[in-house]
Image (cartoon, rainbow, N blue to C red; front, side):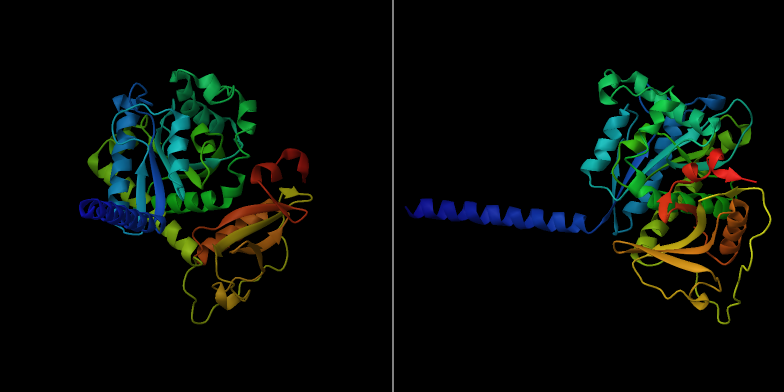
Length: 374
């Protein structure tokens, strides 16, 4: 009887110990910022082979380097969709991110073109604004044709059909602001830290982004088909440079969520006032454009000294998140000028947003030709 009691007590103690250990591990992970890193292509899908280089190898090398940097920071937990040369279906990449309850999804690729085009670009999910964006998305989406049961996995999606893209955009709509913020961080750092040509932040219909339920971006590191850029991206130095830049951008993004992200106040700020709209040929009736300059959990007084001298400020609140804007106009030419002013004042992640009837709409919708007048 004594042995049985002792054995039972031991089992209870073991269960309690294991439970405490699991709770401790879970607690540690739950406090971390989870980043899912996705190396494009892999296995029997080599990606593009510009100049004989292999996109699948370059993207994996950069992803592993980004992950190694982030894993040294105790604030982050890194999850990989692949760490070896294997083929992972696009829908499974999204599943990995969703099951990890990720805070961020970053997919890394390399571009190609029939010309000597070069430069970096970062995509968020949205309607392609032009044929070039659609073609980039089509090339990446075509990977689903290698999957055994892609018709069922993607509910009849056709990577060659522009109409199929429209249904992709709805899932990521609520994460668009955050995705655009990260994309801006990535592109600005590529340009300023590495002196890479920035082709900008763009929207297009990528299946891999559609599958995720968190802010998500797809980074095109550059063009393997460009002689100089392909050689750079295939080198250890190039891959290390790009990985360092991306990891720093992810850290900047995480910190921007913790507190409002803007440059220190100048001692004697010079107020920038915009008294009248400039002449331009891109006026959109019924649409109001603004420059989003910051977002955070802090309620900041709308005064020029709090925003490096900028005037014409406004603010919205979405749950616990405050968003701050500079300027307000239906003139798209003017708002781009105001964005340049904001950039000059230190708001490096600023970007243009659009409203109709006080409701946020996508720039794609705002810039439709049938809403403009001269």
